[in-house]
Image (cartoon, helix red, strand yellow):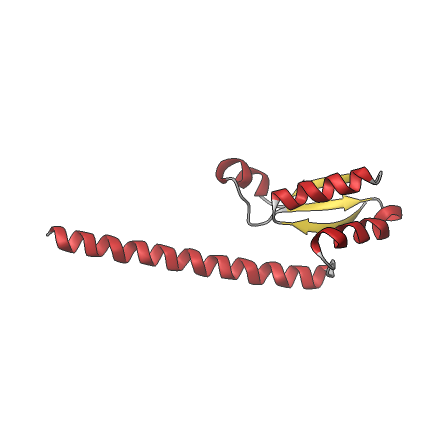
Length: 112
């Protein structure tokens, strides 16, 4: 088995699996890290799922995935993009927490 693709979107993951299986290509989905737990508890995961196929079907599977998501990037490019997306998400989460803390401070100061 070879890693075909990492999908962070559960809907996209389901689409890819369905398309591969429709073409007779067996696919194995493996949650990355704690993504299975995160999906169950919060409805989403930052790490997504890795999809694996047999080596003999890898080229055909890449073409199918490319038809769904666009060109499939190399693992190195994919890892770099994933890091950038996570950094953006972390920045947005930090900004949200700071905004909530500011709002809480304003509310508390007005109540005093």
